[in-house]
Length: 219
Image (cartoon, rainbow, N blue to C red; front, side, top):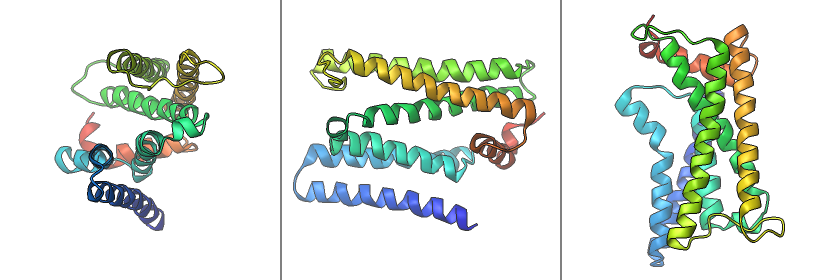
């Protein structure tokens, strides 16, 4: 219970920082910053909405992971300009996004596998492969989005990196670390399906998700 409380406190602490930053920005009439920060705060509340309206339990460790990722990528990265100040910031976050998307892709197929309404069973190798492709594919779509925003609206989402002003190096490193993160999750997911020994963080999260969402796993 102490561990659960720690995750909740950390999540609430980050959300409180976002709330204060939004209020301060509005107070100083910095409307774009205030609106963006408020929008980021709403994004961090998404897991709560999912649990409240769809009755789906999300492990608090995963919720904290998502909140930290959103806080680091959108608030620190965009508002505080960490992407420009620290060349490795974007790489670290894309590694995390590969892990997050890999988990989402794995759970999507795993839920279908364990649902009695679906008369199709997918082998562990396919489930792991799908989670890998899902994460890499979503990472590629995000890079297309960045390219489109830069071209259509003159934004600077594809940053200069390692003496390459074009942003190509930034894009390729993003895809590489996305792939590495996705590969890690696909390997852990495959190991879970084959052994289910509850050894890795992913296995513990999956077991908690299954245990607290029996309505999704009726077989």
